[in-house]
Image (cartoon, rainbow, N blue to C red; front, side, top):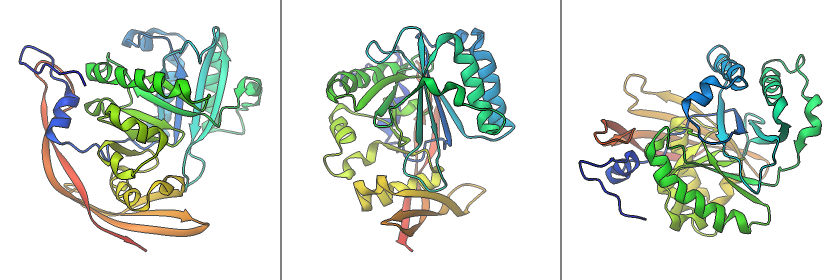
Length: 334
């Protein structure tokens, strides 16, 4: 990596502070049941989100779904790509949790004429709330058969935090040029808008699995993409799986380390059995899964094992915060 100037007169990158402090990225993922990912030309400045007449009703609808209906919906923009994208059409990727226990999100992809994007998206969101009243079959002609394509989405959204552009873009370039370009259409790599955790930049989300990665280094990309070595090599970079909550994510990493690559194919879910609600110093969790058609489960105790100082935003004088670090003290198959 290029040397970073961390002198007092320069920007101090939150991700450098986080990594130097030894902050563990696990458990930093916001759980999701749905993903709405749309092509949107750069730059992704706040005015475009606030003033775009097509986006306004969509954003209001999303806010209502999250607050009033408590729907776990993740919304992201992807930058059009000269090879993937088509003039006059907007790509919309929609992922949903298919069941209580699952291994990856169910994907639908559409290429929508630009003039119909607003109508399509609002109809799609209304369909989530009332499937009988809002029919999506009118858009079937725009649906694409891309269930075989693996998507890697790297945050390069420097307007949110400069660390994402500074560290995310080189990783994006490497994945786009050295991996997607030689994948025979099996892998696409996108620049994506902010999805949280820029202190772990460069960070990416892997879909349709819904796994997040952070503090990425070029030398681990082969293992991430091709899965041709020990899972232990990815442990320091794993932020967690969007199908689980914070404490379940921490336990799930330990299970993955024991089970190996096959673990990623098992249908699974998790729950918190008990927790220290006052200080979150510990939690007992259970991860249910299915292996060879047999129901199985792990129980784990997650406990605080220390604190580190980190920064959640980059700048000349970043604000430092003390954050808890957790580990699994007990893990048993039941």
